[in-house]
Amino acid sequence: MIPESEIGKRIREIRKQKGLTLEELAGKTQFSKGYLSKVENSDKAPPVSTLLNIAKALSTTISHLLGETSQPGSFSLVKKGERQLMARDGTVFGYSYETLAHKFPDKHMEPYILTIPPGIKKSPLFQHGGEELLLVLSGKMKFIYGNREHIVEKGDCIYFDSGIPHRGIPIGNREVKCLIVIYSNTKLTTVPTFKQTNSIGY
Image 1: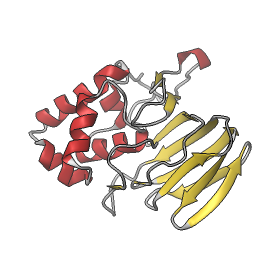
Image 2: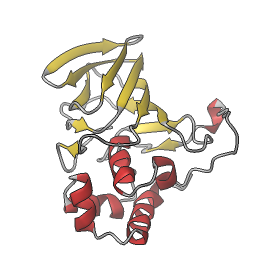
Image 3: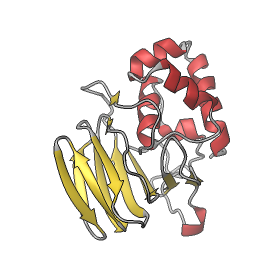
């Protein structure tokens, strides 16, 4: 996988290879042109949901955007020490997350260990095609899904349609660590949207 500081440059490179302007990519993703410019010029990784929407708009995969090197075959083992960490410091774009299956080619699911830093009072709503599973490994947070709020803590697991706006906000002064698995539909039936242009999310 390429360094976090190179992800924005890679997105710009792939966009240009596809012959798309920033304005055209903005139309495909419904992100603002300014936000996409910030993503391309930042040395920090955007959140996974942003990468997912950009990848779909560019007719590619998150793995390709991240420059992940896969191995041929139908089995992947990633040892604990082989996880690749992104957004190490909890950036202005998103939380930190570790890759769990970067060796597997042409994945239909994207599994990560997500860490949400404490002290976040507000985060944007996210909405993208597909489904998600979220298992809380430590900490406690308020999870907003549509117009409903749920308290989830260690051991709790939620599975949801990620086409519904959602976000998570830590409760207390402890970080929240989760296993998340994102399943992306091969054909989007709804246009992915992003509810805020420059804030923390996943």
